[in-house]
Length: 180
View 1 (cartoon, rainbow, N blue to C red):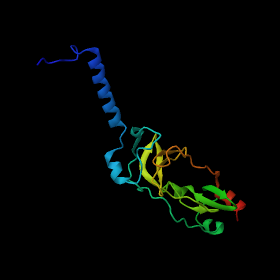
View 2: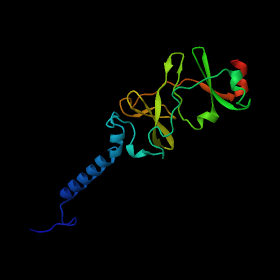
View 3: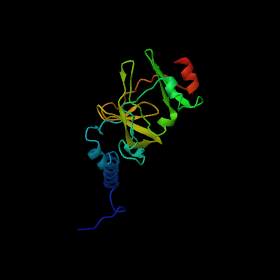
View 4: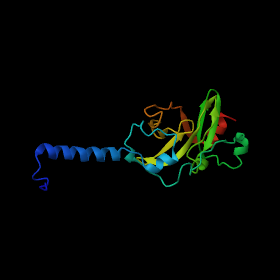
């Protein structure tokens, strides 16, 4: 039997071999990190809108930066005892209810799960980043969401978009004046 090398192969065989190697490399690249499947058994990695190689570890593990799941609110007058009037807060108002989330607290918790005006928010952190942006997950389906865009990128809701609700960043004194 004669040994063949790439120079003696016919162009058709060489093309078929290159195609097979390319398909193998593509299918291997399209797979989720095997550890993810153990960590995320409910996430459907077959449904995705991004290349999985764009998603990298951000350092902390799943929920390593814990969401605030049961935020505790106090009256503006009480909060004024520990919040400087110039302290920035994110103000969210929905269906007549207003909340102020101090940035000094959000620096340590990237997500706040809250119910405002009947709208329930329930997310956690995956511990992953895509293009230096947090990838969060919904706790119902474990679909992954790009924080900046609100796009579902992996799982049942891949391709869906979260409804953005307006919020503003103001000084605590402005919030206190508007919502005593």
